[in-house]
Image 1 (cartoon, rainbow, N blue to C red):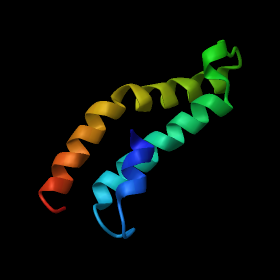
Image 2 (tube, one colour; image 1 turned 60 degrees about the vertical axis):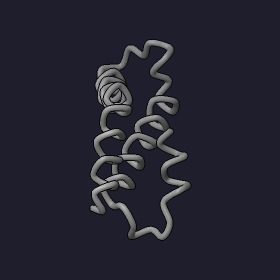
Image 3 (cartoon, rainbow, N blue to C red; image 1 turned 135 degrees about the vertical axis):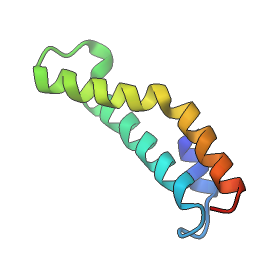
Length: 75
């Protein structure tokens, strides 16, 4: 969903809140995959990074919804 939003926002300066939110979520998704979070890492720093990425992903739909409402107001 976040990648779709980024693909639809043109030019780059339009809808900065929506763009920033979608970028943050897609980065968290990439981090979650890169770190192997779904396999249950044991290193403390990796676990912390996985929690952070997972938290961002868990709040992603709500955050995208809020960013979309901001965009609809023209901000």
